Length: 252
Image (cartoon, rainbow, N blue to C red; front, side, top):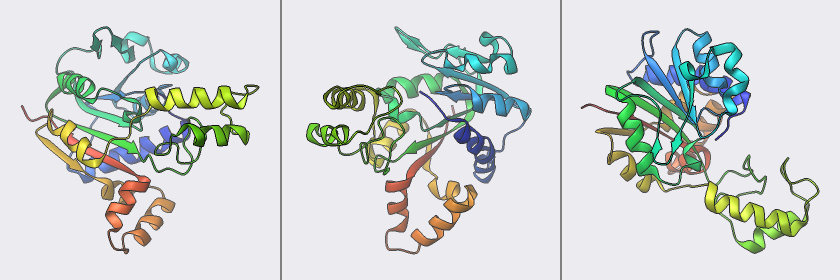
């Protein structure tokens, strides 16, 4: 799981605004977990803003931020894999956030059960999901690779010379094979119905809150949303092609 610094800047500004708009404002007394924290940039920004933020991920790529946040065990921890476990005690956090992380989660039930476990009763979570219909994904750089993953399609773009930063010098056949394997094992774009079912199996309150994100996003996003929402089925179009956002609460 990873996150670019520009995305962390956006999240550090927008997540608190969205949570406040949803009636769950952040406060310095709250403990926040960034699920899939990547390099730890969002955690570092939250902590500089005065929040008690922590992060977990599948590896220790957050090491670059340790000098800013303190010992790794106090702030960042690696998710345990066998069995799968978020290495924090039960009922540790008031708020959980994730920014374009669940597209890499293959077992939603496993992940959501763990997130519920580490949330306190009354705790809330806010998760942002990218759309599989993004014109250009940030992983394989193949247009619409979230929804079109046929072998012929991936070979075509590899033959044209499309490469990510780790594929320089590889043949088009090697690149197409790597992309196919990665998309199959490393990405997941469930439908809205499936998302709702997964979250409702673990949380008492589940809401899709894309519109709130649009209202508090960048100027470009706000302008685009105002145009799209005037169209028939505008909400659905924007959610399908821009992405989804889920707010959930543990009440017991």
